[in-house]
Image (cartoon, rainbow, N blue to C red; front, side):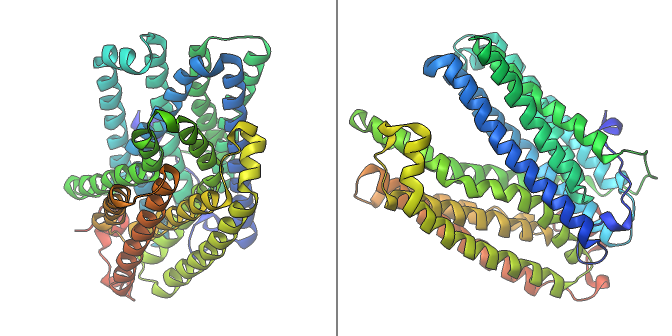
Length: 461
């Protein structure tokens, strides 16, 4: 199974990420397709949710929403570290002169870990299926099965994303997103038009769409066979790296979604309307977070390539460009949200949601952009093999959020919004300091680097 998942690609010199060897025209075309794929994915997701929601109604659509949320949180929480390690390991090896996918050693080990985690997670769901079925899916077994199948699909998708990002295959990356979106949206629209009102059918559509994306990526990426094995890296180093990435993934997802949870927990019966309005506004304000998927696919391999050979100037130049771009985007997004946000919420969700004002939208947009910046700086930390520190910003952010929410005496929405802003500010500040320390320690010569760590994807030794 590991061998089949390996997806060996022809990484010719013009495909390599990073500042060393690249074709600007080809890379630009690939990134354009990637952004296009992400846009299609966003539209497809909204079409899927809209079609299933209208066909099922609020009560039955809740089951589909639970499945959606579980696949996002559990799937990304478990397998996003696998994607990161694959992308960084492959890009580091490519920068050191390995012109074909380094499938031996660490890549095979990372894929083995992915398979083991998938089996353990699915087994845990199967063993606990009575509890999962009753507590989350109102006793319907079909949703548990759909969740397991969907979880395997998410695992395969994130493995594929790591390999495609590491080898600079942005066309295949974008095509995978687009195919996944079409696989969700088109069947949902057809089912809704046919009057199908079974929520489990829509859940299975969601679970199966990832497989279409993976198949399309395999076709577009043109797999050609396996290169020779490489010497495996010590398992302790690899598992340590993945463990810290898993901790980072868990803490970051918690902080990113804590605002939604806080509104539900802190609201009283008289504030149910406010809670619903908050959630609808947050969907709009978080649109910039979707941009991070494209950033992550392009940034981590480039930074990893520069870091693995001690190219401090290229590394710092790329980080500065990213920070400058995020700074401009933060200002624009915050102002745009303040001016047009309430109108967009009312247009998309109805006049009954027209209770949000420009200040609320500005704060939500600002918090979302600061979280995007933290995620981006986290990628730079990981490229420097500082996984042991990558979870610190999110942990500090969680502490700040709880402290502000517990002590701020104001109405519900403002209380949660300011908690989000201050926690995101703290997180990005800690990430900036940690990255600055890492860059200061980056050696200027390849010989000063930890070769084993750079070529294997292992964490700090």
